[in-house]
Image (cartoon, rainbow, N blue to C red; front, side, top):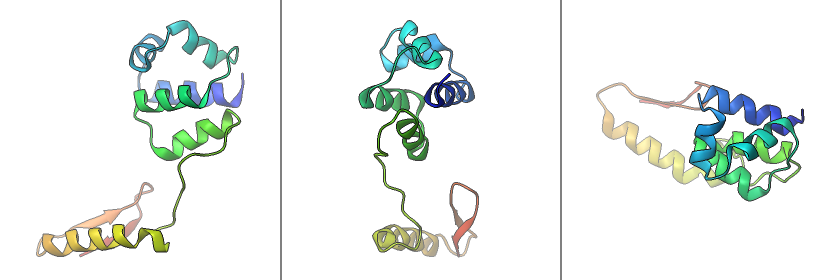
Length: 117
């Protein structure tokens, strides 16, 4: 079994999709999903996009599927401190300020506190 096949199966099972459910959501045959999970078929970039959309995967998981299938990552990862994130930080800061006096905090995907009021 390839790395892509195992990753796809793990995500499908964690999202509680059967192969049939996933095939209906992604608009492909259940047989093709089975072939992807056993490594008998290789996915295209478009197929990985459709599977990611069907399972509502986070962008990091989609990048992982892409790299495991031999493609370059499509979604750039940025650190919280990057200059490109300044508008996001400003929006979150504003949201926390207007939420005062009630406590609020902003967390990342690993449950680390990024900002709080």
